[in-house]
Length: 167
Image 1 (cartoon, rainbow, N blue to C red):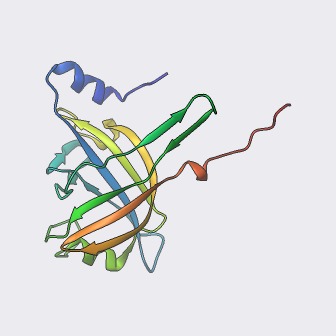
Image 2: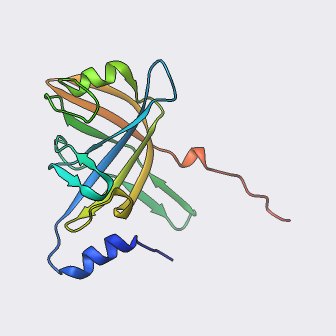
């Protein structure tokens, strides 16, 4: 059964005309220490989530497109990878003095770190109330023409377990 967070459900019940945005969370850790984990949040427009004191930077060039395939005849399902494109322009992040996202990547590792995609709508003020629709891993990044492109891969292989045919 599908269950959404109560804050998300309450926001949907307030109005029938809803605008939805995707929020991308990129988890990182300091390159010299695994203990300084930081998450950075991006969307196509700036959002402030007051209850979690979280600022979502509106630097995505476009919302991510996540493809999935379902082969019922062969009992196979797959979710493809995608990339997230972030404008590499000066911005301010709480606790950091930096000018561009690429400079942040000089000190923080994103390889094999979690990437989550959330669905947000007006009235949701906490990231925990957003609807998580995707969870994957970052596999690398490229910088060109003032855009940082982060490749995201499906992480189901990390939780895939082979089950016995019989018990």
